[in-house]
Image (cartoon, rainbow, N blue to C red; front, side, top):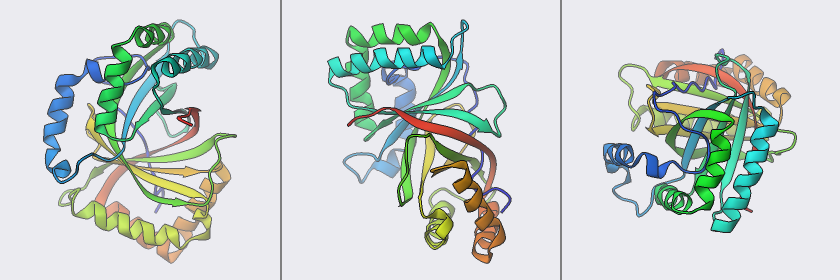
Length: 270
């Protein structure tokens, strides 16, 4: 496999938004449409799995990361006052991107109901819109909402220095399906990576778009402690029989693009 974990490419929707907390109150109608389109997959469960809200952002008005961190600090104060616990991650591009994205901002939620409740609390307060105003001054973003499901978690990952993240943004090839081909590939993926020393400290998860103006079917996200760990893992996949077999399976099912990111947690629920 030339590159197993490939590119995260989010197409910019027409409507733009700044980062803040959940955009739930801004996209209720779209949320309902997205929900009913995947309702059958959730029909048997009391709650959905984890959700991830993504913002694809660019700085405006001469702002930079220092300004973003000041807005983040202001946001944390608002969250504390509102009693909102949240994990937020910042990714900055390393290679493989179009050069049109300054950073990605992710908010994680335990489930879809937590996303909605958090949005109502945030936007229904005085503190939420005030914190939002700080972001409006320095960034312009597009947003999306996806499911997030971990398929492997091995060893120990650190937050400082930032971790290295490789992402595959994929479409299914003709004849392959989310409920048939994807579980079979993920099972093969777990077996192969679980048996390789190069993936000793590693976490992998998938993201499936729910609310998004992109033609991506699924994303595979791989998190490594360092770029060296990433390079060693990719070498193992390309030079071993097991890795090459996995690569053939991957290319049969998916058509993907690739990129590499530097990521860190910037707001913790702890």
